[in-house]
Length: 195
Image (cartoon, rainbow, N blue to C red; front, side, top):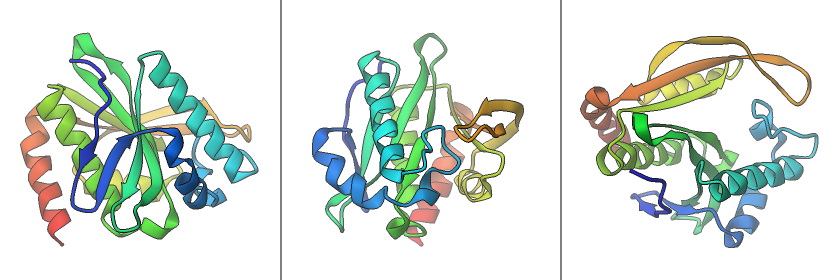
């Protein structure tokens, strides 16, 4: 089990290893400050936030600690967001999905659901994970609803977990899906994607 660059393809999206060719689409869709407000990459200029996100993802990959993806909207034929596998512990067969953002143009289109389905399928069925975790800012109710919608189980709140760029000390809400739950979560995702 290792983090090997891979392209994952669905009906709506293709997840490609993050590369320089994705920057133009990412810049078009990442120029909205609202996308970054709950992320450690948040800066006053959203394009600076995007640059910091990209630099952070490249660093994770270079150290073998993560695998970053550009989320390609197949209809638009461009990158509309990004996501990452990270917090990878091979001995425990677990990882985290996160650092995810999507441009407003693809909100409520099924892009996020299919992105999570592709990442989870690869994690459980190819990489053999026992556990996949996700986390979000306690203030980010939209993200919490999206994570719960796919069937992840809430595990609790890490209080005063992170100091954000603006100095706010955030609580972090933790979620997970374990291998025994994957068949049920997979069926749920399949139903959601058929809507």
